[in-house]
Image 1 (cartoon, rainbow, N blue to C red):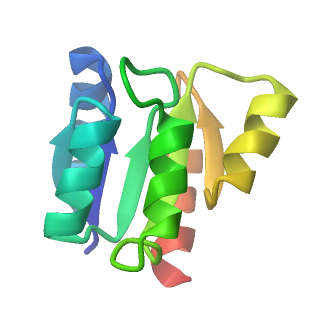
Image 2 (tube, helix red, strand yellow; image 1 turned 30 degrees about the vertical axis):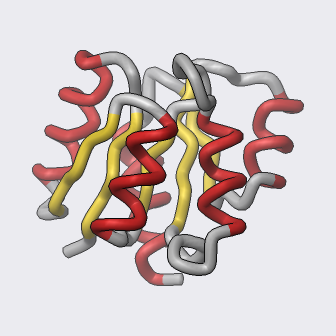
Amino acid sequence: MAKVLIVDDSPAQVFSLKKLVEDWGHETLTAENGDQALQIAREELPNVILMDVVMPGMNGFQAARKLSRDPATRSIAVIFVSIKDDEADRIWGMRQGATAYLTKPVNPEALLSAITDAVAA
């Protein structure tokens, strides 16, 4: 079982991801924006973060970059789950330290596979 932090400003998206992740037996935490994600990540040290890209304030790319530069959080796997599906967004997301980049609506099997791979790494 992994501890998974879900970061998204859409309550419907958080609910949907939370249900999937919990149905697979993982513990979940939630944050509404990048700033909350950084705080929770430092306090709770989740195994995986499912991060939206488009959020008010600090976007997901900025939050992932900060997480990867902080010695306390750099080992946490970040999986982007975003509506942005351009190849440039995928490349940029991976350059920010993500282990995977999935697009919404998320394919449950792809998400489970990405979480499993991230936890096993």
